[in-house]
Amino acid sequence: MKFTAKKTIKTAIAGGALAATALLSACGGNNVAGNGSPVKNAAVEQAQAGGGQGAAAGGSENESSPGDVNCSKHGGQVGAPGRPKMDLIAVAATDGTTPGCTEAYNVITEYYEKLPQAEGPGERVLDVQGRWTCARLTESGTEVVCGVPNSSLQLETRPAGAGKAPAEQNREFPNSTQRVQFTGYDANLRMVRFQLITGQADPVDGKTYRLPLQKGGEVLSAATLCPGESVTIDDEGYGSLPCGQDQLIQQLREGNPVLALISVNGADQITTVKEIYRP
Image (tube, rainbow, N blue to C red; front, side):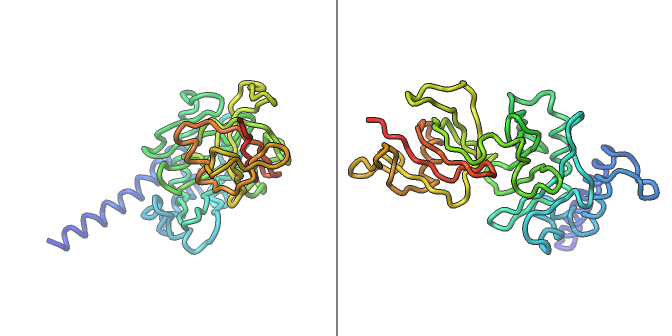
């Protein structure tokens, strides 16, 4: 009885690998004399390396390759019709998990197919491959980031050779300081949402922007982010009490807007958040 159960599980895993390969093959055509679909070739290579079995958990290829995995080195670049081709990157999370390239191609292919039904200017699509959420990294750019809710799994598209950061022309606020009102946190994308404000906290343009927090970035509380016994501000009225990024994210998850002065680095990551004190 135990042998039969193990055999059934093994067959199901093998069937899943074949199904993934068949799906990618259908998207890209037949492989004839090495000139067929690069997407299919990636699926075949992943299956040979154990990617079919490990696609949801990382795959054996990724276990021997620390850091982000550029799936396009094996399977070719990706892109929506009429847009620039990008490298497909399986992002290495801090807990060591990385999506397999087979799953990455499945996800990005379905996302591009669903673009006509996408939400808003960021082209967000929910329920890709039954569990992923994808959206453009910035409203003006073409890079895409996908994540799994309540998971560290993430994949991105990036310009060839651009590394971790988006192309400079697609960045929103590189190397700048902005007054903002935070309006929420997108857990799937690991980004904070905000609007630009004037000195009177009125919206500048009414647009909602999204940027990631730099890992280990500084958050300084004035009164509400990390409540203390008294107001803690500097000579300019900005928060001065060290506070964690987790506290900022928790405030945003609870629907509490936060006024702040933010500093953004050249990679469009928020490095410093200083709460603006409101008496």
